[in-house]
Amino acid sequence: MKIHSKNLSALLGACLLPLLSQAAAPAADPLAAYYDNTLACQNQVSKAVCRVWLNRDGHYYAFYDLGVQAKQPDIDGPFRIEGREGTYTLRAEAGSYQLCLWVAAPRIRIGAEKQRELYSEATCYGFTPHKVGESWSENDLAGRSNKLWLLAGR
Amino acid sequence: MQSLPGVHAVWSARRLGAFALCLSLGLALREARAADAPALSPISDTAKSTSVSWVDPLENYYENTLVCAAAVTGNDLCHLWLYRDGSFINFDENGAHTGHYQVGPTRPDGKVPVCQFWDTTNMLFLPGVPRPMMGPPPVPGAAPTVMLCHTADFHTTCRRGVDPATMTAQELKESGRNMAERFYNGMCYPLGPHHVGDSWFEDDDPLPGQASKDKLLLIPGHQ
Image: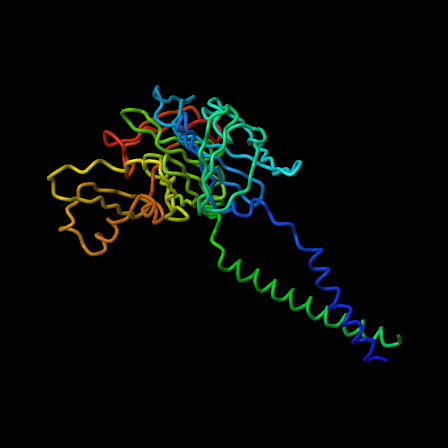
């Protein structure tokens, strides 16, 4: 009886394990390919270049090269190089994703935001997950075409 | 059914054993990490505790942005975010780089040397997008020369136009480094006591962009 109970428990455990592990398996992270890599973009009209880092902890960084500026920069700019940091969330809505960005305080309105460059505004952007090495095109919020890349590394 | 308490006892003992093993492994790992962990703060605790009125010379740089610009044209070339924990992000037209920095002793002129060490030697260029030109263009017909940087006692000096024939094997190896490799191995820049809104010229930078100096601006926030 003792041996029989042990065998039964073991059998039950062996049968339940795959079910339990399947139930406990987390859904694939749509951003998995983005962590530790760089999302890059180039505005095909302004030629501004962006590089975006999405960290696992919910922080993001966006860096811009807006090209040579017409005026020499002062404390208030205009700057060729710009960056900003903040937090993000990825929302799944009706079968698609939205990448929502919150800019960290103090929130300074940088030139890239004034130009409405991709990922420069504190808002939600349509988001389609891509693989490392892929390139594609998307329009920014001003309707301009941007070329994007998911580049390996940072 | 009488056997169930026995089975539970066996499993409980095993769980307890496994828990104890995990705990010991965890503690051992934590101790090993603590022994290997580098000091996060770039300024030693001894330096802080020996002075009652110790003021962090980099205080105004944290949470703000140091902009390096060309001395003549004024164009901004890089932006630096220094964090209190000894890490930083430096970004320019070639991309962004994380790293850690070390602060040397305050110099007689009141400036502190800040040595940047990038985390990687990666340079991430966009496919099909023209790469920015680094360094002056080669002079046609002139003998090939190289740039050599050397760091000692928290001070980096770089010499341009060095004849490779006059260099040692080690210098030849170091002269072949690109910008990311130089910063990976450490580049020291003096930072003076400045306030947000200041702009000034620095003539002791290792790689001055124009007219043997750099223009610097300390601008508010991270931008």
